[in-house]
Length: 521
Image 1 (cartoon, rainbow, N blue to C red):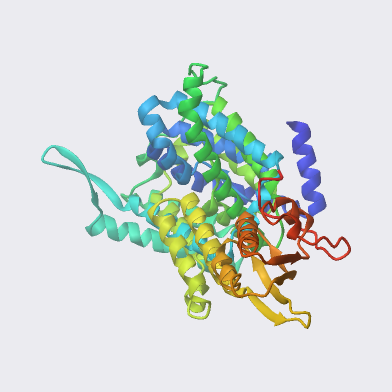
Image 2: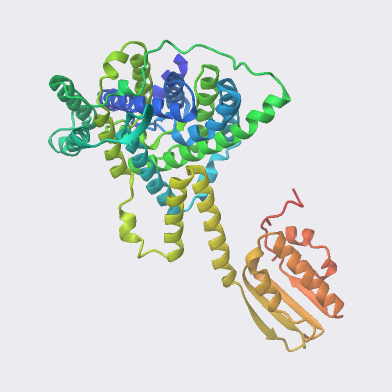
């Protein structure tokens, strides 16, 4: 571990990240304070004890910062993964959860080693905008839970909204926090504004003895060091059958959120992270966490934005945040539990304001309608379901729109040659979306006896196109006509069956490209 940390320090120095150790450490301290209520809340969501969430925030945050591919990005227990864990914990208990987290890490490491992280580049920009806006809304909605109070009505404890003086005090402290975060950087940047806001509001509340909710009202965060614990589950195929589906979903959700957050941090810092290394780093973090009684996690966009805005650009900020969080658990739980929740809610509200792409309101009428639709769709699905589902839906819809649009781009130039033959010069890509238009171009019954289809300006994209060519060849053969297929790639010729010797081979001019087909795999 020490050699890895030393190598990390050298890497940051060469990349220019280690320029301000003080800013990194102060930023890490700020992030650690913001991690506490989030980790506790997500532990409750998953149905496990608060320390399970806190240990996950510590270990995932530390290991992802050391081994991951995006300096400055913060990882920990997240709501996106917590909602997947609920049913597993409810039906089989937390030991199965720990086993699922270990397997999740192994899957993520495999994805990184296979270099599949690069496929995050296929996510279109409207999907990215929808992801950012949707996640900002989710962060905002998650903070509304802090406006609930417990009251006993007819002997039954119920959650109701704050009202009256408690609500006014809570809102006032939130406004004070947000005001400090907004105005302090205009005066000085010596101290992270979020940290200063938390400190000032805490002093005000404690000094004046104001009656408002604190971190300690959520749960006690006092605990010891996490210890190695092999999940107490039967080593059998039945166990694998139970945990594998959850592990696959957790791995997918974790990597999608982490890689999209990586892309966002890249834009904020004008640098470039390493996606495949981040997959491996997240996998190492989750594998180890599962063996130490943690609920697993992934990148956290809110805390990552806090870190970047507070001056944390290197790995040291993430490592510091994790170590400070452990120190809170071991030594300073009493102090941290006194921090007003209003201060932390104010910090997260500023994260929401900084995360939401307000420019999307300005550009939504200027961009194509299909892109605006995808943006709104992804935002809505993120809020209604989860991030992974939203991104998958957005990518699928974008691909279908792309296919529909490009299906209109294929056309044919038809000409009759002096020798009595007819040539169809095909222009544009031939794929599943334009097969109907392709078939409509030809008339085997009324065409002359000698027909040429010229593919010089076309590309055969997938197996649907191959089948369409084969079917057309069979129609001309049945009509007793001679058909020539010119300038198909070698791979296309190998995939054609019914066309047979109708394909003219011209080695010097035939193009070379691959067809989306598994027959030659």
